[in-house]
Structures are given as structure tokens and as C-alpha cells.
Length: 80
Image (cartoon, rainbow, N blue to C red; front, side):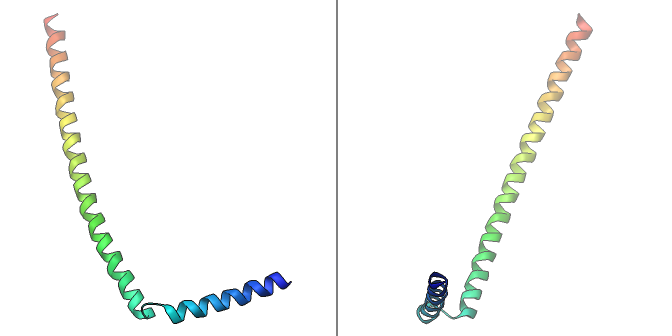
């Protein structure tokens, strides 16, 4: 029981100290978090678009390679 009371007391003291020594207000902190989240989201969207563009390019190349292989196989079959 003493442990639980000590734990709760320590949690309250820790929370109070965190509020006293916090470098910014709650509103400033939320603004900073939102700004960082928006920045990271924009970066993620740019990277996503790059990845999708690269994926489409590779898929187009694979498709044309497969068509070329298929055409060669048809030519080989007709001459044999």
C-alpha cells in the first residue's frame, strides 16, 4: 500500500515539475506539434508521389519488355 501511495505522490510531483519547467505553453506546444505534423505530412506526400511515379515507370518498362518477349516468341513459333 505504501508503494502505491508513493507512486501516486511521485506522479503528482513529477507532473507539477513538468508543468513548471515546460519550455512552452500548451497552446504553443500544440501549434508546434501541428506545424511539425503538417511539414512531415507534406514531405511524406512528396515522397509518396516520387515512389508512385517510379513504380509506374518500372511497370511500363516491364510491360513493354514483356510485349517484346511475347512478340519474339510469336515470331519464333511462326518460323519454326
